[in-house]
Length: 151
Image 1 (cartoon, rainbow, N blue to C red):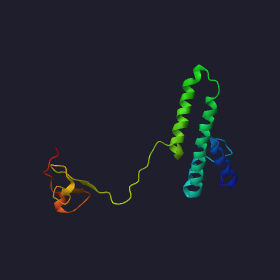
Image 2: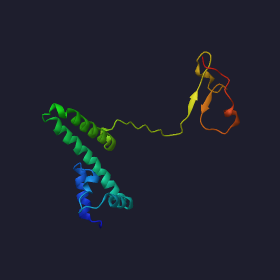
Image 3: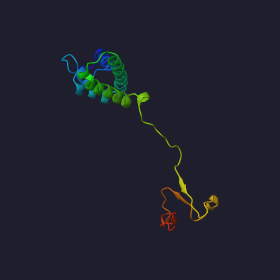
Image 4: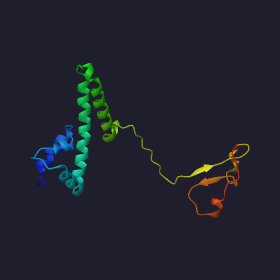
């Protein structure tokens, strides 16, 4: 199948509505999954559009699950609905950053850890031999084994 603007718009719209790419590619009049992936590998803008559509689809799934929670549920369906809700929540946490549990901590600058110890705990020994800067070093003096012990 040839790449056309109409087909791509339809694929993106269906992704935004929460459909999976595999279900979108199933009908005979749609390109197969491998074709979509080839198009995405050749076109970075299309790849970004598909990712954005999938994110919107995850939010759509959350909306559907909210609607499902407001409907009366038969006792036999509770476990199935719980699994659907859990999957929608997991999917949204992975695709949509505002729903994620992950925190990102970024270190700017050269990371240096200084360990200082003394008998009385005073920081005056900063320039003493017992002060070590922990970072990669090729100096022979930094690679000597430490004979001090921590009590």
